[in-house]
Image (cartoon, rainbow, N blue to C red; front, side, top):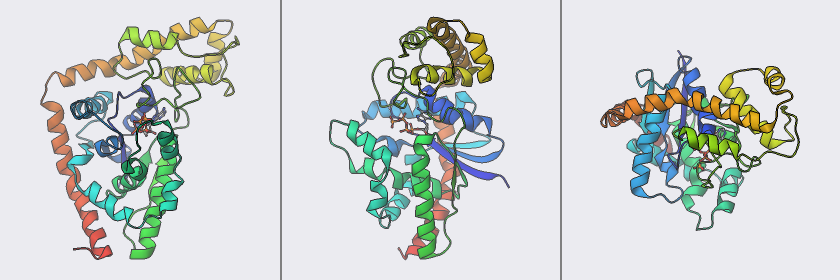
Length: 327
Ligand code: AQP
């Protein structure tokens, strides 16, 4: 029996190389090692305001990117969260016994609410309860995520343990799987902050569907420092981030990369990094165009995925309702 994997990405804004290197690429690499469920978490997306037409399009775009990156819908379930209503139902039940103090400790909420100028929704605060429901509905054992989501997976474990201790064995306790390198790709404009889909500054993120010219331009303008050496030095976040991206796209060792750039300047690094990223994304972009040429294909994959996910989710939900005494 392979271990069950569940993971997802919110269809907010454009998917970027942080999502790819920190999450999607790991899913694809280990697709055959696990029994996978990959979700487009649209209910998470609406925790911040979304234009309805754009959201609908972004759900299809992100689904297409999963498939173009190599997620095979025959081997993995791919579906949209809102098409399986058990996610919302379990989230509500979990809400009713997660202590509010646990939620108040979540650093992502603190960061996101600080950045937002408009009102912060209750849903944004409650995001980790929905994420716990997503994971726990499917007897998940492994949750591959970037390190920004580690705390939410920890909370999910605490929630499952608490529920099991009150109501008896119900949930499997999941673990996060975080890549050793690439778990936190930083913004190109500000390498002290995480590359993020909701950060709209031009030059912040390389998006997976960016054109050749846009990728080159963003990398050329990336923030560096006033030193010269091209070395992996975590205290120099700009150069370090560019080198990590180079490392992940080329698969070369750090020693070889430093030797390769020895005596060269930042302009040479940026030029070569642009070429490496463009070539690294080319197969994904080509496949994406092929897949989306048939306007019905993605919807058919999503509908089949929801049909496969639903019975498993319903089974857990029914057990939870029984344990709690509902209905
Ligand atoms: N910069 C990143 N580096 C490495 N991994 C990352 N992930 C996100 N950003 C990076 C990983 O991608 C998966 C999906 O993330 P998400 O979009 O659902 O939520 P997020 O972590 O909040 O990502 P964003 O881009 O910052 O989205 P917004 O701005 O909409 O909140 C997760 O596995 C995440 O770790």
